[in-house]
Every structure is written in structure tokens, then in C-alpha cells.
Image (cartoon, rainbow, N blue to C red):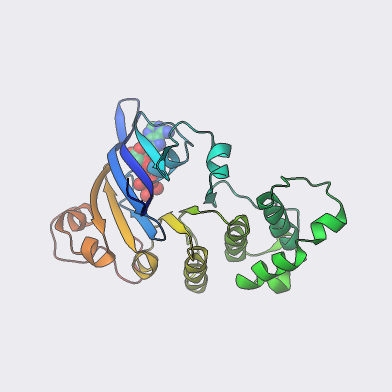
Length: 261
Ligand SMILES: Nc1ncnc2c1ncn2[C@@H]1O[C@H](COP(=O)(O)OP(=O)(O)OP(=O)(O)O)[C@@H](O)[C@H]1O
């Protein structure tokens, strides 16, 4: 493995009762890249993502992170190695304030664990830094609101802020713009770019505008297999990719600015 590759899968495979949902996928993610996993419905994207963090076990194949085989590691172990998965396993506590949420993530990163009973003095040490992170995601003015009280798009921004506070090396994002209106999509794109500064992001995303706008590298899955990898301009012109998306051969892009693939 070269130094440049932070995450690699080797012939990663997952069967469900004889049905091969992920079929021998060998993928390399370069350090510092935003790497998108796309593909038509049922292509195996979510299953592949779940295999990366051992959320589900592979039937065959390996996941290598920083040259270390993490295939059978526990989720806690994987998190300790610097991989954070946003959204699906949410790090947000709904009945704590935004500030408290970020403070807990900072506390966790500082190695103090999730101790709700820490003294006020200790917790306050993290306040300035937490406010800076909230400002970064434009939630500063809502710092004393409970997470449960804020709007959906704001919650997603809070989740990304929590991820920034944990300062992982590799961030896995599961459909960061899912269910969002146009304005929130723009904001989340900007935030994903921010999250990706000095770190690597792997994301599953359906919105082609987002994929085209922020990905350095794209892997297209179809029927569990890797169909193509490359830049947006590479994969959007790939005949096999067009066929997988359109269901037949047509000279057309895989998506336009407003399409959800
Ligand atoms: N737990 C499971 N048991 C049986 N089959 C499953 C299971 N999970 C996924 N599958 C099947 O594996 C295939 C891939 O599913 P997966 O959810 O990974 O695709 P996807 O690309 O994420 O799809 P979508 O874009 O619709 O979310 C599908 O045919 C699905 O029905």
C-alpha cells in the first residue's frame, strides 16, 4: 500500500442468503480526498458503507486502514483509530443544548470520555472552542437551544460540527444532504468541504450536484460491483455508468444539477 492511500478494500464481499449485495469490491481512497460512492438504487452502497466500519460483517475480503487490517475490529476500536461515521449513528444528544453537544465531543477527543458528571469548571474549559465550532457551522446564535428544538437542516449541521469537534482522520458520511431543501444543500456542501480540510471524507450521496461539486474521486457501484472510478467528468461519460443509470445505452450525463440519481 502506498503512503497516499488511507483506506483500501480488498475484494470486499457480502452475501445475504445467497444474494450477493457487495461483490468483490476493491477500492482505494486517497488521503485528503472527498471520495463519493454512487450508484442506482439497490447497488450496494449502504451495505458497502456498513462493511467499512464492521457495522455488518463481510462474507469475504478485507478493509485496510492506514495499512492495518480493520475488518474484524469493533466499532469502538475503529472510532479510536480516527474513523468517525456521521449521521446514521448520530453523536447528537437531543435533550442537551448545542453547546453541550459540542463540548461533549471535545471532551471525548481530549480523552475524558463521555462523563456527564464532570465538574462545571472542567466542562467550561471547552466552551470557547465549542463556540468557535458552532460559529463555523453558523449555529452560534442557537448555542443554548436544545438539539431537539432545531430544524432538520440545522441538526445535520450540528452533526457535522460534532464530527469536526471529534477531529477524526477519516469521516464517513451517509447521504449528507438527504431530505434537504436547496438552501440547506448549499450549506451542507460548504460544511462537507470544511470537514474535509486536512482530512479524508468518504460519502454515499444521491444528489449529483453535490457529487459533482465536491468530490475529488467517485466510485460507481451497480449490482454490488464496482463499475467505474474516476473524477465526475470521467464517470459521467462512462458508457457502462450511463447504461446502469438509464437502464439502456444513451449518450447522456448521469445527472444534472437538479437530478437525484
Ligand atoms: N439485511 C439485508 N438482507 C437481505 N438483503 C439485503 C439486506 N440489506 C441489503 N440487502 C439487499 O442488498 C442490495 C443492496 O442494498 P443496499 O441498501 O446496500 O443498496 P443501496 O445502493 O444503498 O440502495 P439505495 O440507493 O436504494 O439506498 C439490495 O438488493 C437489498 O435489497
